[in-house]
Amino acid sequence: MEIQFPLDAIYDTLYLNTDRSVDNAGNETFTIGTRTIPLHKSIDVALESEQFSRQEDRVSVYRAVNNVYSYVGGEWINGRVHFSTREFGDFVFLKDSVPPSITPVAVTGQGVRIRIKDSLSGISSFEASINGQWLLLTYDNKSNTLSSKLPDPSSTLKGDFVLTVTDNAGNQSKY
Image 1 (cartoon, one colour):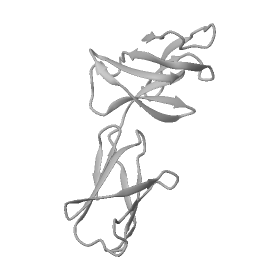
Image 2 (cartoon, one colour; image 1 turned 30 degrees about the vertical axis):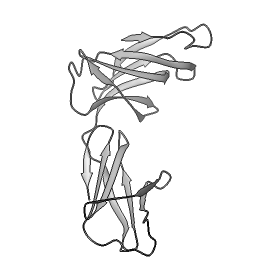
Image 3 (cartoon, rainbow, N blue to C red; image 1 turned 120 degrees about the vertical axis):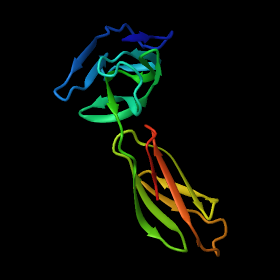
Image 4 (tube, rainbow, N blue to C red; image 1 turned 180 degrees about the vertical axis):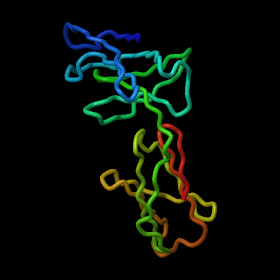
């Protein structure tokens, strides 16, 4: 584990605790500081995993809080994952191989409403087209739904509709 603190990254004297542990499922957890201590600026972290000794497809770093994982990401350089964070806490390597889910709510000539969800890394991007033409969609974060926006309210959606959803790990789903 290598941590770089830029000037003024911490507010006061810091007694930094670090640890590496392995749970019953074989997941490595890297503890950096106490999650309740705030940081003023991002710190740069490089972690070397014994479980993943080289770059593996769809493996990223996640911050763990009470068995809830939030995607941090990271870039593999020389067998280590480098990332920046503004939070202390527990960090774990996880592999996300499950593509996002796409559930149609309403698909009519008047518009499209589709629910999208990802179980681990979160949605990175989405893109829709109808008959090869790009279609504007708005995303509602509370309900995880996409809704179409027609440039002309009197027009209708007719033809081949394609929606591609990609998560932060690179998994894709198409509807």
